[in-house]
Image (tube, rainbow, N blue to C red; front, side, top):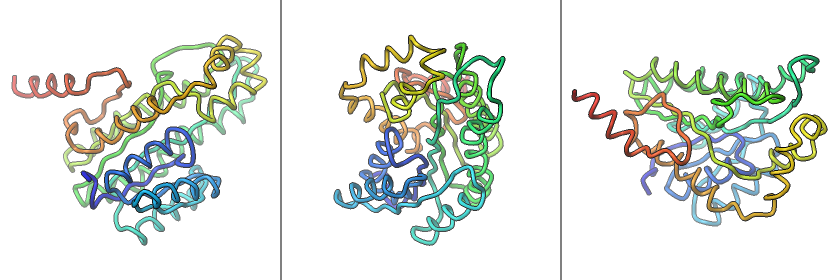
Length: 267
């Protein structure tokens, strides 16, 4: 129960990676606020956590809406106390297609979820964490943040921005004892991936990707979901605070990275 006494807020917690992360943190003792647009989704996850003996608070909120973000934070604090762990997980893949001719309004809507949402939370949570000299953040980005793929400018731009937000914010709050990390969660056919498979733009411009998703959609991804949840929990544990500001993929050896960072500090 290494997270006994911790209060976590997880966005996109109703399904997929967010659900797996929330279940993991609760299983290790954290009190977890579950945030998503669909109340029935977070209610179901909260029931899973409670059935296993954990503590959870389901909150229906639009993470791109400043008033909803503020409400989710205040409700969590009222129920559990100050938030010490924040996981930004909500995201979308759309719109798909070339930059030329793009539906820019839809493209910008995607940036609201990828860029505005974490900024709304971090702008409110980091000052409180810094004042308490206690807090850790994981932003679930994607391997796309380090790739260039035609037809995916919305997703790539959003995920790249998330990594850079983490890089900069980590520098700003490091001396206050607050750590931030960005990760690629690994490959899982989540509800987002299933939506991609039926998206007309993805079918037209990313047919190969859609086909690959279809080929593995019935696979049991429980191991991959657990690997992501374990990586997030490890980063939130405090053991890897020396790596604050970093971006990590599931295959990365973060123990080796930690040893290297410590060696550099002693040199």
